[in-house]
Each structure stands twice: as C-alpha cells, then as structure tokens.
Amino acid sequence: MPDRLHFTDSDEANALIAQDPMALLVGFALDQQVPVQKAFSGPLELKERLGTLDPEALASADLEPVFRQRPAIHRFPGSMARRVHDLALYVQDRFGGDAARVWEDAGTTEELRANIASLPGFGEMKVKALGAVLAKRFGVEAARGLVPPHPTLGDVDSRQALADYQAAKRAHKAEWTKARATR
Image (cartoon, rainbow, N blue to C red; front, side, top):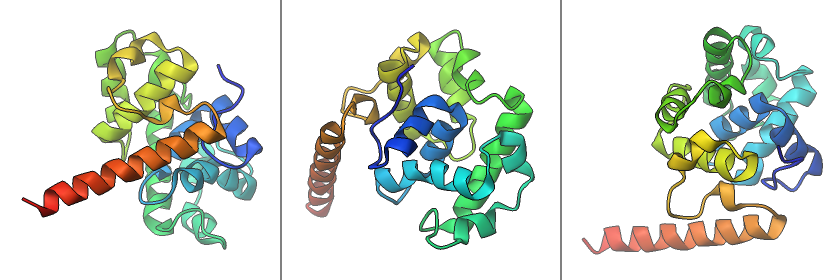
C-alpha cells in the first residue's frame, strides 16, 4: 500500500486517499466535472467538516449542508452530497462498512469489475481508472485486467506525473473535440 497518492497539492489529502479506502472511493465519486486536485481533496475536506469518513456515519448524516459550506466541497454540492451518501450507504449495506472489500472480496477481474461498477456513480471510465490505481499503486492482482492502454491516474506517482497526465488528457480532449467537429 502506498503511503500517499499524488492526486492533490495537499500532502495530507494525498495520504488520506492512500490510507483510507473510503476516502479513495469518495475521491473517485467526486471526480466529475472538477479538476482531479479538487475531487481528491474532497475526502479530506469532508472528514475535517464531519469528523469521519466512516460509511455508517456518512450514510446517516445530512451531507448537503456539509458540501455547501464555503468553500463548497464540489461545484455541484447537492448532487455530489447525494452521490457520496448513496455510496456510503451501499458500502455499508453491501460490504459491511469496509470499503476495501470492494477489491479485497474480488478474486477475479470480472468480480472486481462488477464490484466497482455496482458502486453508485461509477461507470466504465471510473471502473478503468480505479482499476488502474488499484493495479499500479496498490498491487491488486485482480485489477490488472481493468487497466486501459492509455494513461490514467494509476500512472501518477508524483506531482510532475499529475501535471503530465492532465496535459495529455487536455490534448486528447482537444483532438477528440476537433475530430467530432469535422464530422
């Protein structure tokens, strides 16, 4: 297990998402229409405001005011508060409140894919991205089959690697947008 992931500018947030499986899942849940740094700083902000990332506590709390407190945890605080609530409830009900069981209970790539895809708000892109992080940063063998051929957050092992990843992602998105416009 790594002592930190390099997804934010905060050493404390990077350590939290590496050491707390629920924090990692919350970060991925928030990784939508905001920069990577903002998404993965969210678990630390949430923990500081609520005092815990325990799935049972998250599932029973009214998260919307916590997300809306300034500065907001996400640019869409209402919908992301619901998403994190639903994620926590699912982890509580399906995995007994132990977020690591999402990958620890999976003996095969197919089981892991099913576990991740069943999480609220986790589509195919997040399955691949989380799979790449689990395979490349945490050494989860069942995740190796989920790693896509293109760069992902799983390749980020430093602040510079994050900057390089984000630059490549912007370039790819620009090319994709240009290609769609010429059709």
